[in-house]
Structure formats: structure tokens, C-alpha cells
Length: 349
Image (cartoon, rainbow, N blue to C red; front, side, top):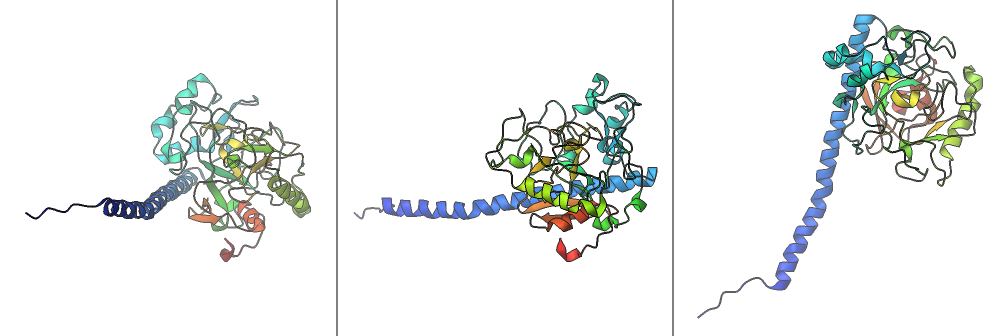
């Protein structure tokens, strides 16, 4: 009788090895496809924000304010943010109706709104799922407060309508006519990784350092026009030269609350065109209106993301473009100011 021959051990091992190689080749491709889908959803979220702003302007003739000093002269904490104003334009009319704009956002009456998480405010590529300051709803999208411009407070597109701590021509209500540099050349929203729950001590060399805020000994002098450029460059260089062993001053404030902020609490719902994308966030030694751990009206709260190589930016015309980490600092600064008069070559970003 003829015996039936089965697989030998060597043949079985070869088959297993081939399968393992195929899995190793396919897994990165699958992960890349998933990230591409998440990035596409992120772009869509930002386009919705851009569209919401344009609808808001169509109704109100002004851009939404970074924050509204809407309870008289009372000093905080917490006033309405730009996101609150746009809730009806983000298909959140019920949430808008639940919000009492005549009292502080930290009042218990407004916790229904403040505790609510909005998918439209979260990037799908954000891998931290725990809210930085739970139970408050967090955000990955931040509005352009400004850039050095060089250096101007509130020189961006989404800025306060008022602030009793200082006054200048930039703190005002304006529409798209106020973006004299051109809405297609001026950033309006970008991504920003949320802070870390529990406020753990985090070193500058950590992979999570770009979620934190580092306080520098370098001071800034604002509203100096072209004369402020050397100071701005010195601050930029100091922020990027922080030793890896330096611990961040705070790690849980970025994007901690989408629903409320203050004119001088920019780490929460704003970003700056100061440090180029995916680098560290820094506050100056002199703070400028408020606790430097929350950043003030002049800081380097940086656009950051988990997308490889850069961040998505929604411009004033509603278009969303991917800005590489390698963008020249002068170009990044120019994209942040609404009326700086800079000349920007479209091929430079």
C-alpha cells in the first residue's frame, strides 16, 4: 500500500514565514490607509469650520470673536469663545439655545454646554482620548490669534472684541474686509494636539512635549512694527533651543475647553503663527496679560498634529491646505497676520 505524504516541519515553517512577511508588508499599508482616511476627515472638519465662519459673517457682518467680554467689567474666569458663537452654523442649535451668554461660562448653569464633547472640534488622528481637564469638553482646532507681524498682539483673524487690560487697533470687530492681506493668504484655523490629562511632568525631549507649554526667560516687546523683528526672532530661537532635560511648566492646558476662554487665555482655543508647525509652545517671561501657563496675547502656542510632516490650516477663504513642518519661519509669520502687508509666494508653502 502507498502511504500518504503530509507537510514536513520545514515546509510548514516556510509557509508561516511567508505569511508573516506578507502581514509585515500589508500592515503598514493598512495603517497608512487608515491615517489617510483620518486626515481626510480632519480636512472635512476644518472645511466645516471655514464654512461656518462664512455663514456667521453673512448673518452678522463680522468674524466671530476669540472671546466676548460679555459680563460687564467682571474679571473672569471664562467667557464665551468663538466656538460658542458658531454653534448654530455647526448644526448645534440646541446646544446654542442651552447656553446663557449673560453669565460666566464657568457658572454651573452652563456646564451642560461646557461638558459636551463635539466631534466637529476633534481631529480623528488625535490619539489621546482622555480630556485634558475632564469633564470639560476639549478641542483639537484652534483659531488664529496672530503672528509676530512683527510683533503685534491680536493681529490674526479670530481675535477679542475687547480686553480691559490693553487696547490697540487690532482688538476690534471686523469682517473679511479687515483681512487686507487677502483671505486666501491668511490662516483662520489650525490643528493643535490637546494637553495631557493629569498635568504630568513632561520633558522637552519627550514625544509629548509639543502638547505642553514652556515658560521662557526671554521677554517680548509688542506692537513695535518692523522694529520688533529682532525680538521676535530671538524668542523663536530661544523656544527651539530649550534643553531636552527642561520640564514643561504645564501639560494639560492646550485645548482644555472648547466652550470658553478669555482674551488673555490663548492656550485654550487659539494658536499663534510664531513657532513653525509641530514645534514647542512657549510663553514669554513677561507673560502679557495673564498667567503664562495659559499664555497671553503674545506667545508661541504652536499648531501641532499627528499627521506626518505637518498640519492642516483652514484659510480665510475657507480652503484647507497642508502646511509642512519645514515651512520658512518668515512665511509662517506672514500667513498669520491679517494686515501685515507681507508679500507671500504661493510656492513657498
